[in-house]
Length: 357
Image 1 (cartoon, rainbow, N blue to C red):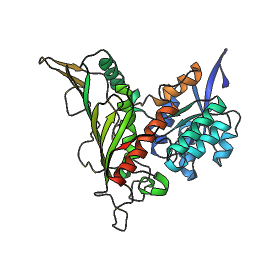
Image 2: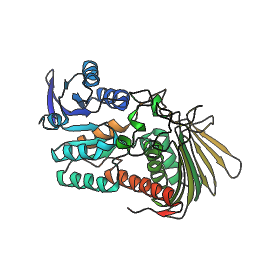
Image 3: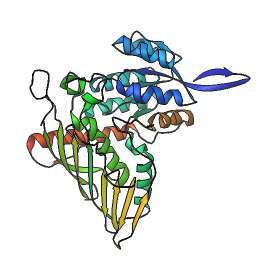
Image 4: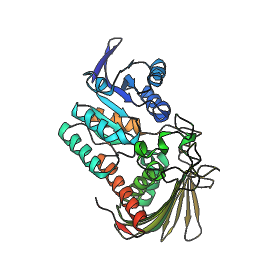
């Protein structure tokens, strides 16, 4: 770590480089690093240099001419990978091999072969590899997990989760139908990798169970390229799941929700129902079997229109400073990717598929 002098006190700072300067870097990584007292932003890299220049003017540091230049900078301790999905694995492995801690946006890679390579690089380097699965770090989801563990709704019977908004062309730095999110070579997956990765990780976190089987129906309903043809990637996915303890559940991921964003989850237990971030008048609403209703106001969740602090950057830096594993690990990213892969196979074969971890 770098040592900065403030007055008579030497303060140790984690020096961070950010690779990829699109919306996720602009709205999450850069501002959240700048608010963390243990961080010094060393600089930025983007293949569109003007984006890196803009963030450098706003947050300080230098503009690196290449990713290789960034990771060869001996002063840098950690790197955020905020590039398109097809570059996640290669850049993460390069950074880990160069002795940098890595925070990689989700989905962690394009497939489980790549996630395994990333985990091996983490183990060789002795550094941290953390995927950016932020939903488990949302305060309301942390409270929901505690309530489940405290048997508030009893034995879990079923779950239903949604993540639906109007599409990445409304969120990404390129707000057109030319966004890289619609390009198979860059994104690899459509809404399943973009929004599905969040909820797949979340249900693993909330229940403490792995997903054992999946049946997925992937479809493209409305998103089109500039020539009017439907995009090559899915804009809607409906998944059925069976957890390792036998519990069933369903999820719907959509880029064609042209109304209010839906990021809700409902967990059904034999003592009651837990409703999280739905169209309700509380962050968590517990409806007990005996008719008692309990409301919890914990804190909101980010939407495309309203960005809140994610918790990811603070957890990543805390894990580095405290020399511990982060709450979200490379294994979490790998297991989520295994479910996504199984979903793609299920859609192609039209049947239930066992998840291979």
